[in-house]
Length: 362
Image 1 (tube, rainbow, N blue to C red):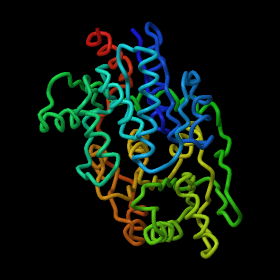
Image 2 (cartoon, rainbow, N blue to C red):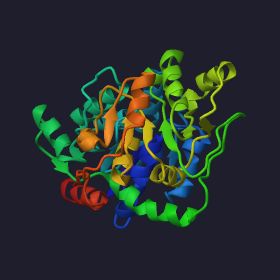
Image 3 (tube, helix red, strand yellow):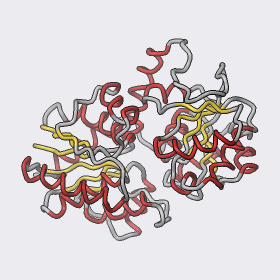
């Protein structure tokens, strides 16, 4: 069986690593990198660090409007599918690469398998929500990470070929946590500060990732978020996403930030280490919420909704608006004492995904 896997953004590299290790035991995988994330620290480093084979194709799409980016991906992916003639196309998550891969395959009547099917924030203003809903509608196999996701699809009338396989991010985290611990073995966190005047990082820190449009397209919300970081009782490590770099640099020219260490994006093993030892995570990323939950690190999510609703139980994850006081209160709250549920599987999602592909793709 030949599978074309389409990836293009940081979380997808990590998920693909877990599945590829199993898939390639018995099948042929053609890896397509759309180039949606084009910064070397957000892309190439992951193929090296996670031991993923180099892509067979790199479309080099880069940035642009959603329409232009998706259109360029569609054109490139279609050409590859016509050449490779795969038995199925495997897509991950909710990015423009996900939708483009699914659309290109669907138009050519090639079965689509969607990993992380059924996730919903119920906010159709989010590009990610648009991508995941549309991808689910045209996928042959709906590979859900949780029972909540299965229920979401059932409420939308999708009950056939729906499987709760667990979360491949759990597979990756379990595998690479040991690798990260071996890499560091008591060494300090590996970060590259950007510019001057950064806070010194000692033995305690908060970890922040902020990049969504609603928090970074204008200065108002980002100022409130950074002001909250300034009020915390330990330094904040803030790896700056490429799409956020310009506005952050402009703010730093006008405002002094003494409790924040602005840094270049970090590799996955570095991120695991930083997160594992953080007091709390402060983020608007979907993946980091879940990783924090799995690692037992309390999280503050600067969003109105989350697709990972299971993380909200017991106060392990708290949703807040981009308000300085609200973020500060949430970040300084005591660590929860309640147990965390095992909602995301046992680290065998990749095996289950490959089992479904074996049984259902003819």
